[in-house]
Image 1 (spheres, rainbow, N blue to C red):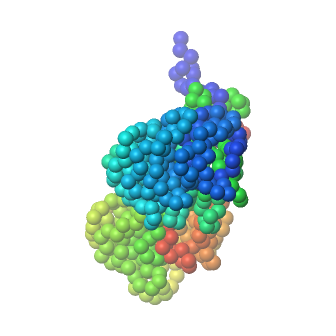
Image 2 (spheres, one colour):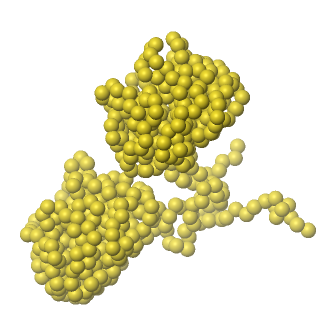
Length: 612
């Protein structure tokens, strides 16, 4: 006879430790044995328990070489040519690597290491220092960028006997880091002045990939492949400030992980893999001899995070669930708009896919017909709208090739107001049926071009309660808001939506259920002209007026919680209807936001299940 749990129940895994997004995300830095000579601008190769560090600058330029056995450094044979700021093959065992280039003065000299001594081999074609080095051995290496001078995009490949010029980097850079082989590598960071840009090498050409979260120069890098790398330390803003930040590249994006024990820049040495790495030397407030070892959870106990999974942590004696809580979200700067725009609208599917349409150029105060799409790093001009206006609304989602914009006006007060609606097909705009009531300061919700909600706004001296739904061919008047409003925030779909704020700068919030509006919990901070995006059970309202606001609040279906502030306070900008409460985008606005873009993302995390 079957047991009830076999019919209706499910098994919950028992795990010794929490699940994690990746092996690298379980890593932490711990102190290792100090270098014998404190220095910066050194480079290295090998693994955490068998590494080599060569050259650098202390009180003078050095030829010094030290090897690491997992606990202490030992001085071994010096380079034949004294220098700093050279490059080195990164994957090589510490008994078979190559050092090339370097400064004081710039040199093309290259030397190979056999485990006991250095031997001069064929020179680089171009003398340079501050180049990024990659490679699998002392017979297969890659030298990318550097300063010759000036800063160069030139790349050379070594085959064991000679250097050959190959495809240039897309961005000239020096003092960058790199990992991988001479046929599959990644270069990231560098100068001028603090690059976040990263590029992958496929053996014949470089392709730009996702940027570091923090641009920096003189950073360390490690990793066995071009799709799994660590970036750590370096110098960033304010100019020359050393940082402790660590980031992991998983083949598509960079994620911030545990910091180095001590901020270190100006040429910190890195070696190893994303699971087991070593960082040494660099510059703190002086030349450093510090060593740090990066260690991750051993593979047998690693379990990858899966959104929605439930498990029992035997170590902490607790049931846990993996979720994506808005309270864990954060804002990051995105690519700037081509020009400052306020009071426009937009739609899209999140922080990497958005569309911003029309609005008021600021400055000068001129209505624009411009439209741009966003790919996660940059805005691109696309086809203009037919009718330029401001304080309009939109509906649309994923992909950003299908949306609708509606309403809007030309000036405040008794100025021209529009009922005009236009749909977007990915390449052009088409006028469709008008709203029943022309209005500006309108708000909208929806994730499609065929199903939208329009509510509130101004058609005369006061704010409107009118609500209309769009079915792909016509607008229909439906149940009014309880409190007329314009310039509030709105998000959700045509059948489930939230209207928040604006009523005399209050936090009054209403929920639309497809038929009528019901008042629910107020925002913690009343506001006008706020940004908003998300679903009716998981949404975000941020920014607003009067006085520029940076406060961000997350809606969980019943109440508002204050979460991470915007990087720059602002109001009356573009937000992307169709985005989720865990992945959104805002841009433009007033008073100082102008052309800025900010991306909202929420990491997947584990939380304890509590039973009340």
